[in-house]
Length: 367
Ligand code: SF4
Ligand code: SF4
Image (cartoon, rainbow, N blue to C red; front, top):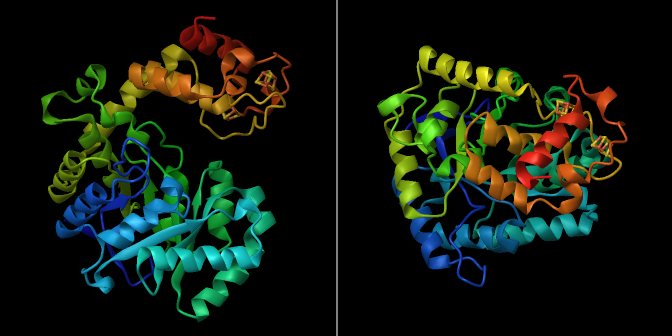
């Protein structure tokens, strides 16, 4: 396993982290603790030292699964990260309860990195004072070691949050399909923050190799999941990539990739870029996911629609995109657009949103 220095913190993190949000489950949807223990322990025994959770993953069973799995391992060799969703408008008392419960479930006296989850600039303005006050107390009592945030926002807003200087670490999405956060990642690294990438394999998008993608780089890439992880780790500003693993096979494959990791060379990365750029051009849909067009007054998830359309048509992962699109609520889908036009002047890419949404609806819903 390879390790990288985690910003200005004293930690060295394994380049592969265990994301405990897609643990194996029983038919009733609860976590299969025995299997989850097997997966997490295999990862730790093969050098993974970073484990990520959230109090609401698996309805609260994720932290518990970690707590069970890490019993017997020296605590100081492990780096535990978990999160709180401040946007839920918790009282101070509820924040404390969640932290105390997390400590208990994780079977530990302290949490290495405690994050405010899914931060956006608006929620930063609304809730961050409370988060800082609450976590300062927890830091003083040595219940947590560092604070950070995970983020789903425009790159400009990510940079604003980084530049506050209030956080030691950032967890952000970055993968072959979503590379826009690259600039924010570079800034965070430059500022001495630990950089964690979630969704290195596109939230499972690349889990199922698709013929078109596997042809991209020829026979030297064994699977798209390996390619996706290698792509993320080839960025030196990324310190750890957390992958949500559900089967032992995935853990074994990810560990092997991280163990024998060789960065993609410039020509490979260029080739990926060329292919995606030419496909994007063909499609004429450069949605960066910046969300400036949101919220849509009629509830359409504009970037979500465009994302899955691009996944299908730019990256050729059609089956997965079809499944994901089908899971969206009807009111968020392209076909529910009323064509009011409010969103279009806000789009920096000047996308004719109404027209493109019609294309999306025709493609996914045959409408
Ligand atoms: S045109 Fe469609 S997507 Fe845009 S704001 Fe109106 S309803 Fe929403
Ligand atoms: S449609 Fe335009 S404004 Fe909306 S997320 Fe995409 S690029 Fe940003």
